[in-house]
Length: 156
Image (cartoon, rainbow, N blue to C red; front, side, top):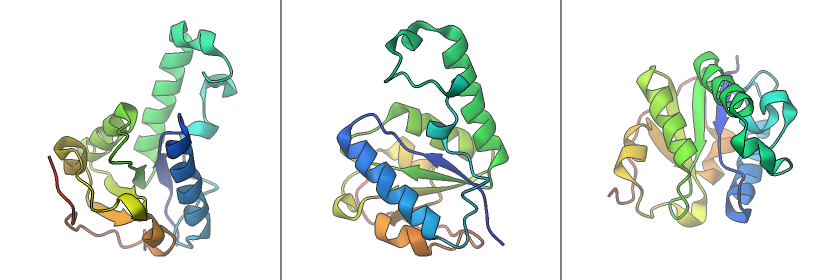
C-alpha cells in the first residue's frame, strides 16, 4: 500500500529548486508513496499558469485565490504533508502549509538537505512537523508507518 502526499516545497530560487528536484526524485523512488495521485502544487497552478512566466498574475485575485484554494484542497485530501525545508531560506508559504496540515491533523514530515541538517530552524515551523529527516533518508522513509522524532539541531 502507498500513501499520497502533499509536496510542500519552494521553487523560487536556485537553492529551493535544487532541493525540490532532489526530493522529487527521492519520492519517485519511494515504494510507499503514490506520486501519481499525490498533490504537487507546482503541477497544479490555477489554469496551469505560473507567476514566473506571467508576472501580471501577482495582481490577479482569481489566480491567487484559485491557486491557494487548490493547494489547501491538496493538503486536505493527501495522506501526508512532506515539507522540503531550507534553514537558511525559509519560505513563508511552506510555513503556512506546515501549520495548516498540522492543524487539521495531517502527519507532517519535514525534510532538510543533508548538508544543512542540524542547522538551527524556526520554532514555529519546526513545531508543526511530526518528524524531521535528512534528504538522503527520504527515498526509504516508510510513509505507511509515519513516526515522530525530535530534531537534532537547534530550534530558535
